[in-house]
Image 1 (spheres, one colour):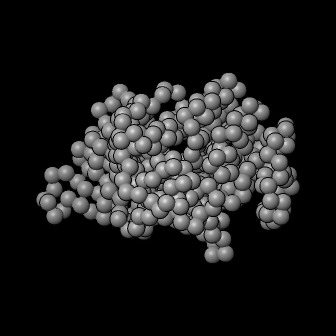
Image 2 (image 1 turned 135 degrees about the vertical axis):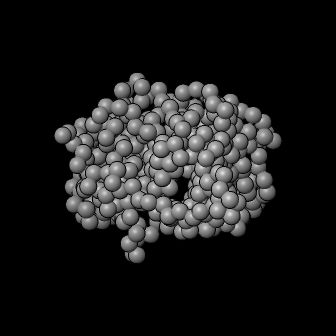
Amino acid sequence: MKKFNVAIVGLGFGAEFIPIYLKHPLANMYAICQRNEEKLNSIGDAYGIETRYTDFEKLLQDPNVDVVHINSPIHLHAQQTLQALLAGKHVACTVPMATTVEECKAIVEASRKMGKKYMMMETVVYSREFLYIKELYEKGELGKIQFLKGSHQQDMDGWPDYWPGLPPMHYATHCVGPVAGLLRLEAEYVSCFGSGTIREELIQHYNSPFAVESAHIKFRNSDLSAVVYRSLFDVARQYRESFEVYGSKKSVEWPLIEGEELVVHTAKKPEPEIPEKVATPDFAHYLPEEIQRFTTKGVYDENENTHLSFTQGGGHGGSHPHLVNEFLQALAQDRDPFPNAPQSANWTSVGILAHESALQGGKIIEIPEF
């Protein structure tokens, strides 16, 4: 089996993926890249990774690198993805894909032009909750899907540099991804409303006043629509990434409190018996044996290691080894990963254009076809 030489860029959240690549049978954890040389060497020494770069462009010149996994700040995603694709590397990138629709288009075109795979590493569509709901759907237990709903609420006070005042829908893939991804639907148009107002010192960063943004999504060639809503500042709410599905036979709702069980509603039962709390199973058995343990334990489960995206995200539903495995299997099988470049562009553009819609009082905005 060919092993792919993987380079990880950004070692904050990115460090979580190093032990997974080290153990995966299709990967050679080849190189790491971090501007801070002290941190670079600390992590390189800890994991025994010899090839190290403080300069992203020098990493791209290394002919041994097959795959670049980008975990840098949001405003660098599109630029670094394009550079890596055009340098002939396959790219996996943390969310979102980009910050403009034009950047999304450019990435899709570069991926096609260079014949290289791109995958946005959307955690929720590989979380155990999503995989459980997907399994129910594929077994026919949900019946006909009638409606989908997602939310992503968190308090981002205290997060670094570019986060303060970020428009809520500019970081929407955690709720757009699952509502589109379950049935592999493509968003056709969106209408979004802003609600409430954040503090003046936050508004000035992006000229975005809204405390909450809620969007309706209509899917192409489908009778389905979905609702997603986001809040980042000045809203009292425990962290919640929720995904809910309403079917003709069964529906699944997310718990209101982190750590509680999903609620499954079954049609035509006596009214008090319709809802039932269900413990979500783990799906480590989907993975190569070498990385199965990472669905329940990773770098940021250790007490001395904390990363806000992980502690607030409830460990991302055990998704990290599934993401790595999907990307590497796609490369080995020469197929598109899920989500591929056009799907990632669609999901990311929903959020970008939802914010534009909110600024225009809920105007319907078409999502371009990629």
